[in-house]
Length: 176
Length: 281
Image (cartoon, rainbow over all chains, first blue to last red; front, side, top):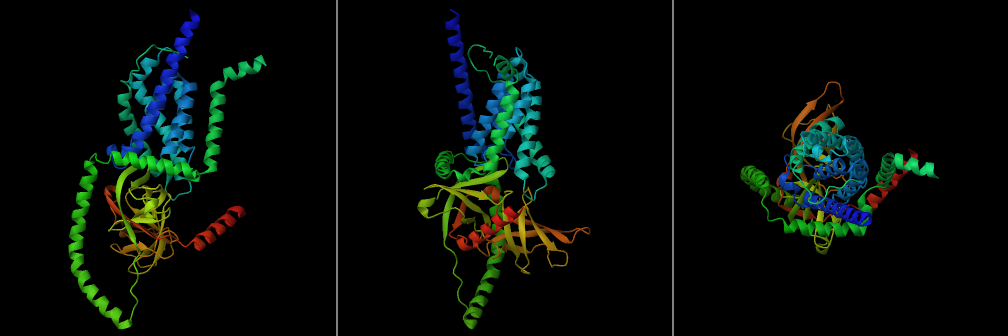
């Protein structure tokens, strides 16, 4: 009986991870092909950050670390950025976001205003690290650039993050 | 052994985090994805096809910008036409007089913009011409107004253009009226900054800026922008000059790829010197 339950549990968990991977690919596709349509003053929301923060708050720090790393890698590859920059900033972001994970209160965290607060902080951490590598060896002023694009980008991502509060994946609630 | 397993289980998050950060830093130190040649061509082709598939979706903001830019351009051109006609007649007469050889213009390939990507402030666009149209990496891209970027990746039917509004771009520029040369860099907004022009040099608002022949990337004389502000800082020996580019980057639809490639011998020499300087460091 227990064996049967474990198999179903693993299968459900596997399906959820496949859904996360599909969501990441869909977001990457959207960002490269359609993001221009929702750009405001050249600033686009970073949907991958929303997904990584959401996964981290739902599944914990350990899973979040892999989500951040793989999500960042996908971004680096499709955007032809220097490979590792988005992966690094999203891994660090997921690690810090993981400290807000509360076992048994996952649903409450991602469906409350707390989620938006965490998302904004995560965006700021991501942008801080990402723009450090972006500005490196250029003549641009880091703080000017960060205040101009980093904060605006974080706010835009947080606003779009409101939609993530209403996401519900059907199936049993599974804890790792 | 058991204690090691317990240790790993206890600190698995921290260990994983450290390992992933090391992997990321190693990847960053390796460099750009452009080194993965074939993979990049496949990616460009796929992205280009996808962007073309969705290019029918109208972008009202871009259309508004384009409309405004075209009206302004129309106004400028109508006044320029009269002036140019007079200048052309005078020029032809003078050329004949001194038997000046007609300067051959570089061939250009017209292309349609099928997609734009604004990702983490890295501005790219995809055009519907590729290696089958003899486009190669390194060719400059312009509009009728001026310089817009450079080809950074090609597949058989599509190319990726890195726009000039990018932190990597440095444009060797010349002020047309006085012939003063300098390096223009993106200011992070809509304009560019021309650096290292000494205080004593004659620079005025309204001066036109073109690409200079010191450039190892762009051909000489491509219109680039107009000086909109000259800031004189008493604490500095140099002026800070702001340039507004002629090309409206936010509303590009049709562009031209200039069939120009920098002299490989010149590039090789520059690379050799850069390598030597790196080794000295």
